[in-house]
Image 1 (spheres, rainbow, N blue to C red):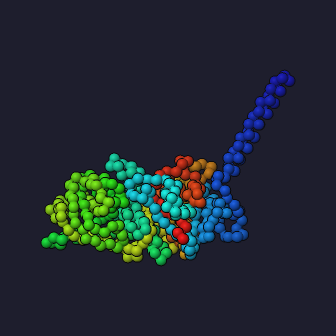
Image 2: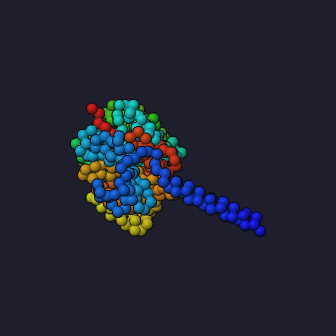
Image 3: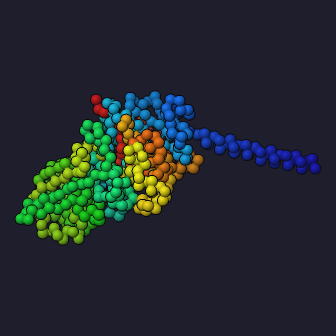
Length: 439
């Protein structure tokens, strides 16, 4: 009997020890912080008033902050880690950049690889977040093709037609999602429209409207202009295409140049010359143009972005939905949040909690943002409505949504500071970047 009692007590002690060890392990896991160093965790609101929805704010790698730059991690009460890189708009040593992966449309690259290429060109990036939406791969070979606007060093590289589909900007105020910076440093956040026309030197002076630049030829873009920035070929099928040469490059937001047609291809997938462009016309519309546009046809190509301020934008990048307008949640987003996505079914992905990326600004600062998600016990992400509400509470005046999910990555001060959902960096289409100005 004594031996049985001892055996019972031994088993009880073992069970108690295992429970205690489990509690210690769980506590240790919950206390693990991000491997990047941080200092001066804002556990009190004595130095700066934070919204009630912020549990704590950490200052990441503060000793390495250059003048006008900050890097924070916010712990949101809803269960998400929000990483924000800030740039003072008045900082004379910093500026915004938009950079394509691989410096062309086709193909993808990690945010880290984009920053490394900039460093090799004697540019010092301080922070970068993944930007636009696009195709990761299809049977046409168009992997890496962005759906959104991209302007780089004044060159108009990509502009689509407004389209009510996830990843595109819808044709409504909610779709005012292109961010641009003028040479004077003015920040713009609007829907940008392409006004492109091909004026032919023929008896009837025919004009062919151009719908998009470096996008998919078909519905809703029946006429697409392909530049050398797209890639080596147009990757179209059954499009009527013709090559223009003897014109000025690159294409810009305000552009006019004479041209001559040097080649015609009725089957599509034309080679894009380094010193020319290709116009692709969707097959049904092409029937009206096959006799009007032939080899040796001459004319004038004109481009004029609207609003007119965009004709001078030096750096521009697009997302898909507006989150904050004048410091308040975008009105369509409020309706979207209350209906749990039913008010805009094409964008219903935004009604669920996922990792997210965004860009915002107010009168004083620019914000590059990554929100971690899909990671139980650490961060579950946000809906678009959560983002709009939280950003407005932080004092962000205007904000747009970028590509998120496993792509959501914030690189800053030499490495990735957030925790991408798959545990590694996914290759992306372009990067919104804060960098040091060249001296």
